Image 1 (cartoon, rainbow, N blue to C red):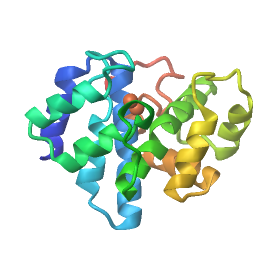
Image 2: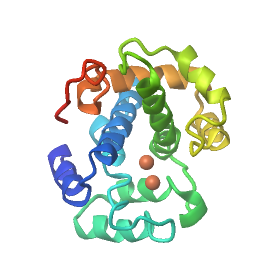
Image 3: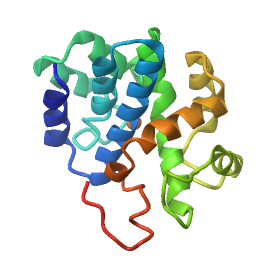
Length: 196
Ligand SMILES: [Fe+2]
Ligand SMILES: [Fe+2]
């Protein structure tokens, strides 16, 4: 499976620009860690790119990602990737992350959302000048992005074996590499619309 094939599946099933951006962000974080650990960057990236592909057709916790997994298998997505996607929701699938790629996916998923939210409330609306300390401040403010489960992230990141704030720095760096695609390159602050 190539990245283009995975991207075609994702675009077929996901129309929301924000959900597509979430997938790109997790892909970028997965690629960052695959490079860092000398793992298969394409495989890790595709796992990130596809992990929520069925959220628009299965927008409830009973079906996502279990029913999505069946579609991915039909489309010929390798079992290792399908399995990893199932482990990003262990409370529903009963499958817990075991491999480094699975642990990375769980560690990278929600944190990209918090980083995006923090970048968007800053005047620059940019990842280029976003610092870890800004994320730290909002992390402690439980009313900010209240849907982001801090304890779950802490646990997932510890399980992956990275220190939390080092992880945040890594994911910011990874996301910076595709800031224009994420709409977080500062163009929003200048009133320009980004075509992602
Ligand atoms: Fe998900
Ligand atoms: Fe996700």
